[in-house]
Each structure stands twice: as C-alpha cells, then as structure tokens.
Image (tube, rainbow, N blue to C red; front, side):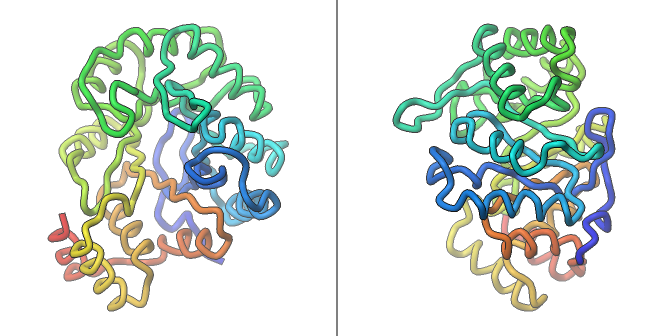
Length: 287
C-alpha cells in the first residue's frame, strides 16, 4: 500500500497534514450538482482514502448542494482524530446549478450552519472564503466584509482557522491584515502558473497553498508533452502532474478528486514518483 506520508507534511492551521489529500467535489452529480450516480461507490472512495492515510479532505456544502458533506458524514463519522476537514463558503447554487455569490454576513452564517449540520460537527477545522467577484477566476475587489464576518464566526468558536480561495495577491494581503490566513486555494498547475511568486511568498510565511484543477485548461500540445513524459516514466499524466506539484514547493498540499477507486489509488501513488531533472525541465517548458 502506498505510504502517502512519503511526500512529507505541512502545517494547516494548528495541525500538520500529509501533503497528499483528497478533494470531494467529484462525488456529487454531473456539474457538481445533484446526487452521485453510485452512492455506495462514493462512500467506498471516502473510506478507502482515509484507510490509505489521507488526513486532509476538502469539501463544501455547495457541492451538490449538501451532497458531499452528507456523504462524508455517512462514510467517516465518527471521524478519525487526525482527520482535517476543510470546507468553503461564499457561494450558493441556483436551481439550474449555476454558481452564485453568497458572501453577506447572513449568507455566511447560514452556510456555516449548513456545513456544521451536514458534516455532523460542532466546529470546522478550516473554512475557505471563496471570493466570487468572478466565479471562474480571481478578480480584484475588497474582501474585508466577508473576511470580517468569518473572523466573527471564528471568535464564536464555530471556525478554528480561515483560508481564502479564488483570490489575488492584493486580496490575500488584505485578508492577512484582518485575521490569520492559514491557506490559499487557487488554480495552479503545469500550464497555469500565475501564482508562481505567490506560492514562494506564502511558503516563506508558512502558509499552505492548495492548487485545484491539476490538469485544468491544458492545450492539446501541452497535454501531448505531459503524456510523453508520463510514458517515459511509466506513469499516468495525472500522476506526473501531481508529482510535479509536490516537488514544486513544500507548502503545496494536494487535493485531487475522483469518484473512482482505481483513480484514487493511482493519484495517491503519485507520492512514490520522483521526477528526474530532465523530466522536470521538460515539464517546466509546458507553461
């Protein structure tokens, strides 16, 4: 069995977690909306992840909505003492599945109550504030009001730590001026490296960086280049992309998601893949 601790650990809030975690988003239905096609299969994936040593699960109550949190509660509660569950607030789903902003103080309080109820928790380890000025990419604008609202919920003991998602460097600086920020969750991968300088800055400050969409937005040529490297290493493209991220910076925590047991095992095995210098050079040229 793969030892996911081989990739080391990094601090997330007051805990140290293994750098290979699991993202629950794909356990919901198509478009992250509605129930899964195979509920028993989704429960099996969650249980297998924890059985193989995953101690960091990323979720949100707007996945489904409510679906992934209910699955996590059913599969894993009572939770292992070392399991860190990270959720997100700041969005809601329309009746058609649209992603809509929801970061007024009242909306954030209701979202917290939903997360606590559906996960079966009295307090949340880490809550990421998803900034929704643009649903698909970071966009400038002050985040002081929603961050202050989360900070108040933290003072009430409902949140232990706060993170940010879909944010710019300026917004991170603004957030850190208001409350401790323990992680940042943005899109970053071989082909999308806008956060290169930010990752290094956060690493120096001891703040975790959690990239999503490790294979998102690749062009056909970039995909071909990744596939060639993967073939040379007798690995899958996803494994190579994850291994590159693990070797990119020690503060990167991975949360690859899947609803397949086979893909889960392949993803976790990426911690065993040590990329040689020539492979890293070839991969770096993809961006």
